Amino acid sequence: RLPFKDALTVNGKTLWENVQDAPLYNDEVIRPLDNPLTADGGICVVRGNLAPNGAVLKPSAATAELMQHRGRAVVFEDFDDYKARINDPDLDVEANDILVMKHCGPRGYHGMA
Image 1 (cartoon, helix red, strand yellow):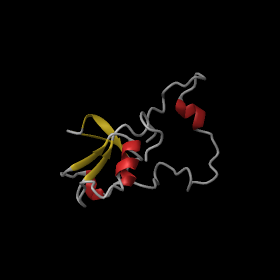
Image 2: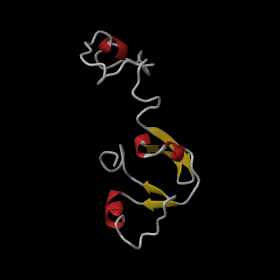
Image 3: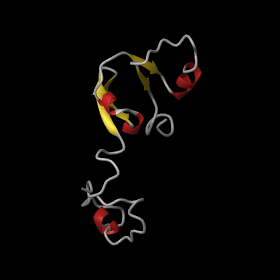
Image 4: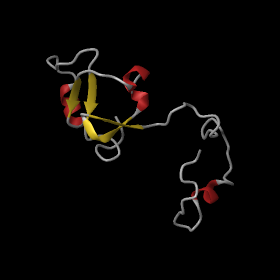
C-alpha cells in the first residue's frame, strides 16, 4: 500500500496523481506492491534503554535473530569513534554483543554505514 497517496504535493496534485501514469520499464527495479523484494521495509524504528526516543535500524544489517535480542551492547559515539576503535585488540567485545553506532544515518553521519 502506498503511504499517504492522497497527500498534496507542491504542484497541487496528490502524490498518487503525480505517479499513477508513470511508465514502468523494469518491475525488478521498481517492484509492484504485490511483489515486494522483502516482506519488511528498508528501515525500522527500534526503542529500548539505549534509544528511549527511538533509533533507526537497517534490517539488512542484522539477522532475524537480532530483531529481538537481549544482551550487552558495545557503543560507538559516531562513525569516527567506530573507525578508531573497531580494530583495537583491546576492544571488549564478544560474539553475542551488539554493536551500536550513535549519531549515524539520516540525521547524523551521512548514509547508514
